[in-house]
Image (tube, rainbow, N blue to C red; front, side, top):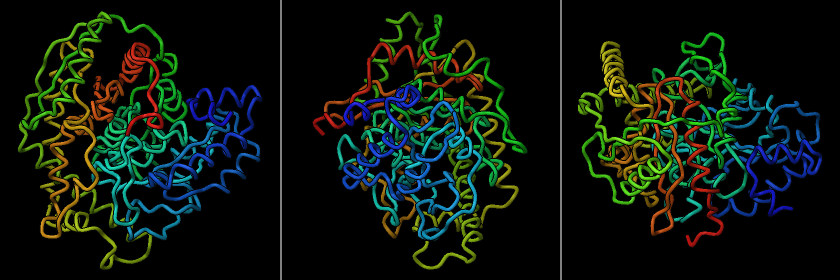
Length: 475
């Protein structure tokens, strides 16, 4: 039975519990055993919550769609009352919030049982889960490689079958990047779809959204059904879906017109493995009856990068200021990694007018990108321009603390586009390279069109079969 449970997605786990074949406690204990067995090699779970989880499994649970199903929260914005939340920073190593975030409240109401917190880089800055405080999370397919980030611990845990699904968030690709690196499905919802309260109205002028990494398309859809909806007082609200997202899974797609781009919008090279993944997917789409045509994103890259880094630096400055307020003191030496400290210092030199001009630049680019969608239902790109990076690739030497961030920009140029436009996007785990590493492909839709992405994802999932397991891979 233990072997059978680890191969089930969250929806199937919930069904077993509903039928009375497995109790919530048995489901939780089996997941804890898997974490204890596999986590030492991967460093995915950084704050266990096992006794809390066992107590909750034995108490009356909400009759939600995921009653009794084990889940993990990212140690960044996955705020759970009474459990430390470090955001990957030594400044917050002992911080214990007294409240649940609105998203966590909705996950609890759905019946999920939280088993712990997962690894993340400091304040989610880099697309890899390697922080000085928490140490590196390791890719289950090859432990010498990155999980991607910033939701890398969650992705590693789900890929290694510790839990069937886990919390993730995305400010520049942090759901889709680790999904690609770990061979999972990762959907970034439309801006405003999921709540950010009660602390945040938005994060970094709307760059950041919340959701999950999952092993199945239906899990992602059903979790979004359970968590989406109005967050009272929030500055954004996505248009309500036409029907539950779970009903989109398996529904007919119709004949779609899909644009394809392989060349990086920054002008750098796309690795042959990532280009091959897109080309193979384009052929599969044509076999499924869709029309495919090449399109190009015409952007003023220099002004776009400058605007993005200004907003990002100011966002990190805000995060550090909030962290200092939470712990009641200013950062001391050793509290912040050099990259974080450098971004905070940069933020202090950015005026209000500079910041608002950066916002205006991203908004103008958003209009330009969305207008390029005319005549297309979706847009296919690589998720990343390279296969999962070796650990340490994004480290910064003391004399050049921005090296990792600048190196990352050539790695993730496609994912960040959707954070400043607010569009929904997903990474699909359709390919593996000769080294046995996952290579994701990204699909982007218009604002509010998660339903279309779920329909297309389910069609592709059915065409390619069940996701492979790294537990049986050569890596």
